[in-house]
Length: 416
Ligand code: HEM
Image 1: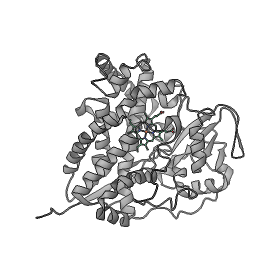
Image 2: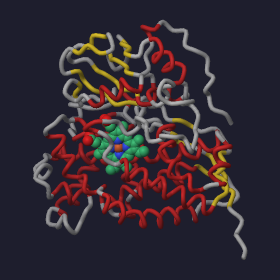
Image 3: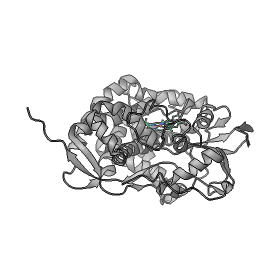
Image 4: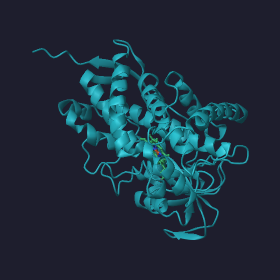
């Protein structure tokens, strides 16, 4: 297996390049097109796409500058290119500007406070161990299904304190959100709407129960929202919007980092050797996995006023996409950026969690979960071998893997 780094260049006219095509990501064909944009048109205007016209920001430092500038670039109304609002309005705090954003974010950050993470760590470790100990021996299976989805879903069920045995519903709802036809998926809007209203109904029952709970005793997301003045009066659709944010925010991202790590180590076997020789490298490998995978390809903003940026005139109302996936491959900032290097110096210097006021709220939780998982994997397996081609998701937003066939090589029991 090898990675498609040496893909042919892009002959297209610069003006007609449209990086919103989900097939670019399904076919893992993003490298040459983003390399060309970074070089020749780092602030690029696409006049015509299925999502309308939009700007692409593709260099590391430009992305950081836009992300940190919420005065000129608004998140109001949605953060992916495919967001539409007319038929399904479910506002949430990632799609808001200050001051409301700040207040709602603050209402739920307790769930990822260091003290809570310290409490969660042994729970996640124990569950990761159970998942790994149940995996099939001697036969190939889909790592995504058995490990990435399962572990992530368990973590989500824990931070929502959602009925544990029904946790796969969280996966299904998250998949519904990200599978709109607009983003390259296949689920018709009516079916998505129906599924998400069911989600709202089940979470409303939980809210009605927890509104009487004491947030000092219960640190789950629903109790926190039900008891904070910034979120206690949300109307049902805003509650649904924030649920969707918290479910999707933690789900696809962590899931695909778990899968991406296995893929990276298999594409770069010398890195796997390094890891086996020195398991102490796990903490530095985790940010490298998150950079290399870049689970969310972009975030979108809308210009609030006319802005001159890197010689281009961005007009008020224009859509601006910050392509994290491109910035994380910016050769001017990151040495040998396409390679997966588990002891990369300064590995945390990446864009995958964004910057500024919307910087990922769950970044420490995600890192902790991945670290614990890899510590438990290394104890048990000498190698998680990828035995077939990965299948990637057709989405311009989530950089996802749906199938990753693997076979396990257990460590020989130590004697003496
Ligand atoms: C590797 C895993 C993850 C990645 C790559 C990731 C990525 C991101 C990105 C790119 C943003 C937007 C940043 C910006 O606009 O500047 C974001 C926001 C957010 N993420 Fe994550 N995320 C991950 C895991 C999680 C987890 C586990 C949670 C669960 C609590 C979570 C919850 C959120 C929330 C609530 C926001 C909105 C923050 C705001 O608007 O203030 N994320 N994430």
